Image (tube, rainbow over all chains, first blue to last red; front, side, top):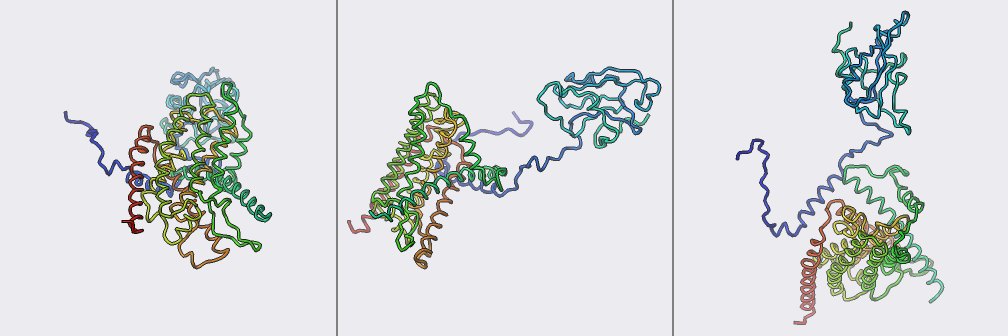
Length: 180
Length: 341
């Protein structure tokens, strides 16, 4: 039958010729190949001194963003937790009190927000699900610890600090929602 | 025997001991670097500049590891095994002429520990004892993989020793002497490789097999035998096995250089004399040894391992008949030249 992909190969097992049986020509051609590799550019990245450049859409540790006035974007709608295939996200919602308008952008906010970094598979579905542009994955790495408890990140680690804002302008999902 | 000779020989022995051990240590470094280069990597570069202290770090690590003897192992043989491997690897270098005579303190110093007139026989004898280290180690471990490794090593040794010996005999026919010194001096004009390329090829392949180097490293193949004869070994006992392998690689490179590439002879030798000649001769010899070591390592990182039946086929059905034919032709040519027909 005609091959559709055109990648079909006919395997042959015809006996080797004397030239092939001596092996030496094949060995020498192989040695020339390895000799050429000896003078190639090295592929190694010497890690502690150099680090590999991350792709702009690298999916590392999450950040909970604040808006321009420093108010938390998250409204604890729970869509990220629903979207999460690894069940890593959990949160409790609370209502914004009078006088807290400078802290939370909308009437509802996340009182606690926890991501279990051991469960998280860094798929980025939370980022995709978020309607408020609150959660993003960044190019930061989650460090290793000896205790399991340390891997449950609360708001203290997830929410970006006012002084050190995390740049997420390179993410694919930014800018899909116009400012409300 | 006068005292000065005794002192001279003792210094030479100690120097040779240190040089072969140092060479073996730095061969491990060079091998790792070469493997890395061939695989587009950098290789060890953390210990010292360019990783030059890596062998020392490895040695210290080997010494500090736990020295473990399995409960069911034959304790004495288990200890003796690596000792024999290392011992035989080291004593081979006794008959190698390292360079022309050196004039120091008003004496002619021969750069050879023992100029015995059956040097080449001595080398072959010692090399074939070398397999006992592997056999005893593999047997004493009381582990089936080790035993397989030991069996493979001994059968491989028997198969390849024959072709190796026959191709060495052709060199003996050419030079008319069993003394390594005479063989080297006989090559001052033309190296033996010119007359005996086939013998060299056979000798080289057999040397790879005797050294248990790739593509003939079946006694210790990691993928099937998890290390073969040294599976159960740890600490410096393992270190001695690995060291013995590199030391014998150094020595067999020297022997190949002597038998086929003129030893310490180099082109344009007649323009020099005295100590300059000696030093240049040693340098030439060292260069040849280095090239051989490089080629052996280069082959290791190029060619995959043979299957065991292929190994036996090659040894008995190809190399042995080929070396016998080569011997016959050489003998006939020499007889014709001497006017025996």
